[in-house]
Length: 366
Picture 1 (tube, rainbow, N blue to C red):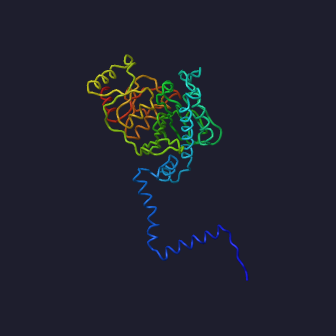
Picture 2: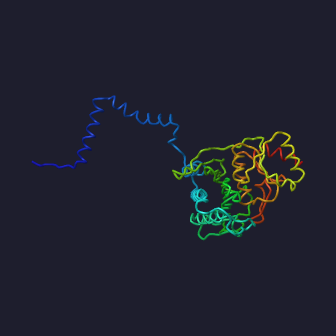
């Protein structure tokens, strides 16, 4: 006679399997109970307002590639994932800024003469390293660098960025942000200034991340605008505002009226009209925060003087806002996205926001 020895683990496996078979055979109601457990769990989750099928930025990027460009190489998707790492890293440093002495000035000025904050320098370094390590970026233009950066390797994209927009307000806890625009390199290019001295309408992606109570990312790849919120516990950007559309009109205007004496007569007449018509003034002093509010609520944002940089402020924001149904023009009424820049730090005026509100402004130029 032969004896077969089995381990305790195997004994319990066979015992539980037999028990499950026994219940299913002699008690059919057990199958009904078992099969409805997952449905009950889904119902409980819905009753608790817990979304268990969240869409992360990574998932969204991959789905959009499959839906819009299924034959694409995936290089832009990889670049966007490298960008989100930079945003997370910058958000982490901003949250800890006061605790680790990252507030205050660095003692130097950037390429356009602005006094650099410590976080300007840190943010710039984070962005440079993230773009270099992505292996998808060949050319980088940063507000904090006098010249463009050309990376070695075979990258096929050019990125323009203001790593920390609104940094002059950061010591007071005001929301700041990162603005970015992405161009595909021109055919046959190995990376040069010509790849970024192009009109904004040729951008393939653009957006911003606002660092405030939460980190909010607004992104377009030329197929509408979607907003994501950083879940710090998951470490992921979660889709919270799909298919953002800016209201066509809203009685809100945003600009620094401290420079009113420098505005031309058409702008001053326009501002007088807004006040007579009961418009509300809302101005934060950080372009990212002001545009974020305008995208969600509607209204108009103006910077009538030549202050904002075309490549990494006016162009990306105009591309984003137009994808949401808005409009961006200069103080002379020219469409921002049609302008061909002559230098990487070229400045522009801007009037941007709800299409109906910008069109009202254009009436004052006639």
